[in-house]
Image (cartoon, rainbow, N blue to C red; front, side, top):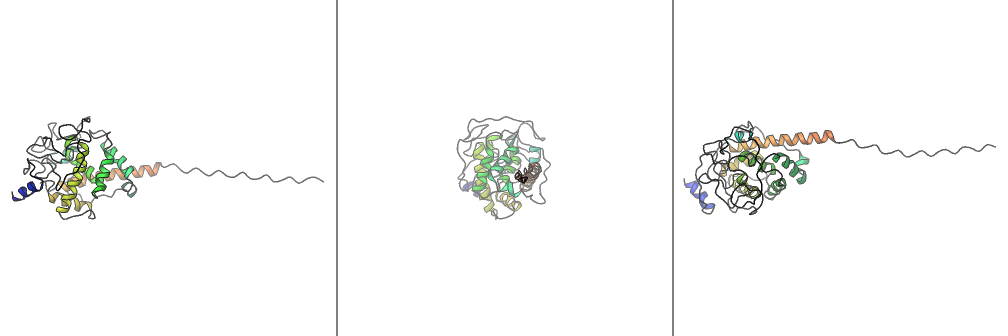
Length: 281
C-alpha cells in the first residue's frame, strides 16, 4: 500500500491508480494501465484514436480476433482492461511467461531506421494501427530513449494486439489504462501519444528497476516489470516471447530478400578490333 501511495505521488496525484484486477496494476499496462513517470511525453492530439482523450479522429478498422479473448475487452478479470491476464489470448500466440533467450534481429535491419519502420508496418498490417505511418514513430521513440523499437512493438502486441482488443487504439500500449477507469480520457491517449509515452515510461521504469540501455533486452524488460509496469510477475517474459516471434519474422524477411536478390548482369565485352588484311603485291 505504501509503495502504491508513493507511485501515486510520483505520477502527480493521477487518480484511478489501483492494485489491479487483471494482468497489471498501479503502473501496469495489461489491465491496470501505465502512466509515464517523471514526465510523460508524446504528442497531444496526434495519431489514430478510437475513443476520447488526446487522439485525433483517425480510423479503427477492426479485424477478426486472433485468440480467445472475449469481445468485451480483456481476457482477464476486468472486461475493460488492456489485455487481461495473458497476451497470448489477445494475439493468438502461445507465448509462455519466460523466454529462454531474446532473439537477435538481423543487424542490417536493426541498423537501418527506414527499413525497420517498413518492417514494423508489416507487423501492423490488418490491425487498427495499420496504414497510419506508425512504424516511423516506433523507431523514433525507441531511438530517443535508447530502446529497441521492436520492444515497443512487442508491448503493443502484448497489451491490445495492436489496438484490436481491450482499451483499443486509444491506449494500445496500455499507458494510462488504470483499472478503476481504463477508458477515461487521459493526456497519453492516441496512437502516436501511446508510443512516445510508452517509451518514456519504459525508460524511467527501466532505470527504477535497476537496468539501463546497455543491458540485454530480457534484463531490461524484467527491470521495467520490476519498476511497476505490471503486477503480473511474468509480464516481461510474455513481452519477450512476442519480441522473439517478431525477431524470427524479421530474420525470415532478411533471408528472403537475400535469396531473391537478382544476380548482377555481366559487363558487356568490348568489341575486338578487326585485324588489317595485308595488301597483295
